[in-house]
Structures are given as C-alpha cells and as structure tokens.
Image 1 (cartoon, helix red, strand yellow):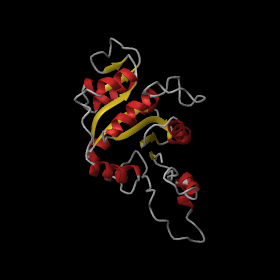
Image 2 (cartoon, helix red, strand yellow):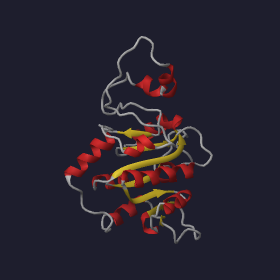
Image 3 (cartoon, rainbow, N blue to C red):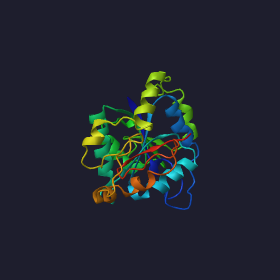
Image 4 (tube, rainbow, N blue to C red):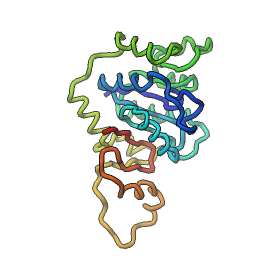
Length: 243
C-alpha cells in the first residue's frame, strides 16, 4: 500500500494559520490532492497541532472539499511537533508497511521527510525557493496548477490502481473497519476506536476511567450515523469522509 502525505498547515493554507477566520486555500491544492486520490493512493493529512483543534481543522478541510483521507494530530500539546510527525510517519512505514510515494509541506517539514528516507524529488515544498534547501526538495514556486500539469506527465503519477486496491484502502482506512497493528501498539498515540465497533453492554454505573479517557468519543457516539459523522476518538487518527 502506498500513500501521499500532506502537512496541513504547510501545504494548503494561503494565509498564516488554519486557526484564522476561514483562511483561503492555495489555488489548485484540492485538485492536486484529488489527483493522487484518483490514482489510488492513500491520502495522509498530518499536523503538529493538538487533537483539541481537530474539529476546526477537519471542518475547514471538509468545507473546502478536500478528498477523504486519514488525519493525524498530536495528542495534546507537544514541545517538538516535528519530532512527533517523524515518529508517527516512521511507524506508519515500519509497522504498517505503507510506502510514502511523496510528501508535501513547508520548509520546516523537509527535515521530517528526509529522515524518513525520501529523496529530494519526492519532497514538494510550497513557497519561495531557498538556496539553503534547493538541493533537498522540489519547490512549487509556480503554484499547484503548474505542478498538477507536470504530475499528469510524470513517471511518479502512475495509472490508476486496480479496484481491489481501492476497496482495501476504503475499507481498512477510511471506514476504519480494520486497524493497522501499530495503531494498537504505539506508545506516543492513543488507540483509535473503530467507527464500526459494536457498542459495549449498557451498565447502570459506567466506569469513570472510560468517561475521562474518551470524553469526546463518548459524547459524539450518539450523533448521526451517516458516513460523514464518524466517531471522533480521543486518539490522534481521524477519518475525513465525504459523501
């Protein structure tokens, strides 16, 4: 299985921060993500932001019609978000055997992607070119529209994968009906619950530990049952699904 990684803040927002008042999306960003999705790649959205901001970030992505994918946040406030990104992506590669085809972000993300073994031609950086990093990545100085045109003729942009592969990606990742082993083992991220996991037996006095460790998932569990209303677990992996 292969994926394409997008650092949310570094790749998409044209203004300073996603936490602002509906920051504009960089022109062509959605089309580039959809291009990779149409080729059958698993889309990974990653951010160093704490999971307490997930509702606003996910709402922003959905509002601007970004394709479905998996979103990963830091659990709580961390002092070194780049290190957390590196740890998570390394576990994704080593434990889940998922290959990163290429990755997008800002200049801050270059060190993360390089430590994962990505070559400069696999790292796409949005913004003005910097002489310091010109040999470590591909700068998208002309914008996403020009980049998309080049992707359509690139060797990296392979023909669509078979429908069986797409089905596995949708079932195992977007629907969360199956969980990679490392998501159950990892120590730096809490385990994410399955959207389709059956409800536990009702008890008159629920355990307080469950209420404390997963307040948002318990609160949201009673919401709508549509594909866009997935259970939000306290952990760091969340589905972004469009109907």
